[in-house]
Image (tube, rainbow, N blue to C red; front, top):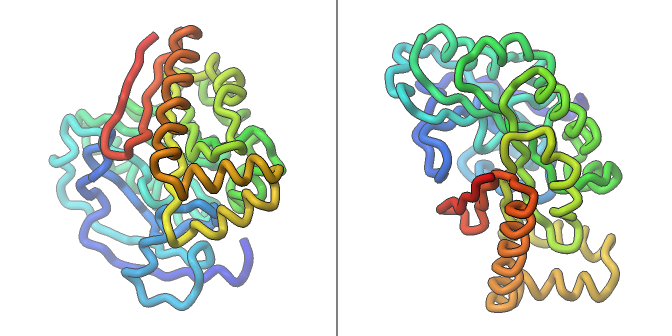
Length: 281
């Protein structure tokens, strides 16, 4: 880890917060910030709530808490994590994700636990994960190309390492899924990823890129650098012409549904960010 990373300790009242996501009741974010430095990171909005000079991706807030009652987790779906990666490298030192998982394990409460990560480091906690009932692990992927993943997610595990992590989880009989997100037009080969992973997962999730202002120009500049001129012009049009963009995503959604149905893959579509479209094998 680079010495320039700023680490801040913070006491908080609670780590288990109500979720606004369509597929989770409670979210657990043991950290604020993430060292993956993904160029498309929507969670960078968190910086406006904090008086920190460092840019997003160059600081992390380590939360500390004293849990008194986990009754609110009863029969809920609890997601690790919504605005950070629970197994980013600094977790090796601070182990806040392990602390929260152990709390849930020891509570004897019937809870559905879900972990979403881009990190191969989750494999260091296989014993703990396997000891928790009703748990599943998601691996997030935007590309199978290691050179591209290193550019857009420089601090995360390489795509090839995530694929191997997925295979290990599958071999360990842990319920798992792939989250193909964000789908970046002309960069994310959705169907190539499906073909690579579907034998090792219980289902696949899909989410399109939401190009918001805090990181819009960084993503546009990257796309302009790596895409042929005609593809980049189409990329721009998808995000600058709302009608064209809506048609693009609707057509891709239909293709994904048809492809998954033909392969008898269970899938979940999050293209509209406030609801889920599901399909079963």
